[in-house]
Length: 68
Image (cartoon, rainbow, N blue to C red; front, side, top):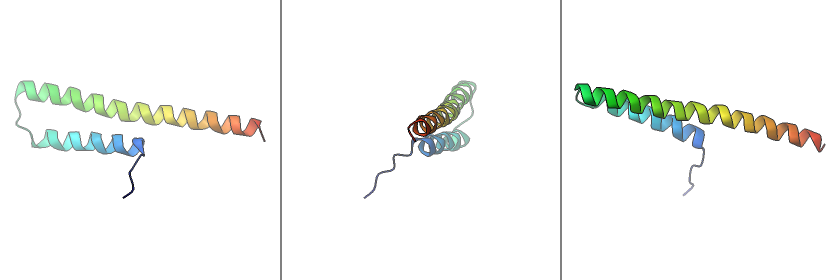
């Protein structure tokens, strides 16, 4: 049994599952408003993590080049 620690794709999968749940939910004003807020929040987290992780990877690459 191997665990999946790839947080980037896990956040993307979570955002996709939230969107799918929203599509199946009843549409009232309150539920629509809250669901859209949740979708924005989840998608933002996934995108911000991906952007920050890319910055960290570039920094690690630069540090490793300094020691070569």
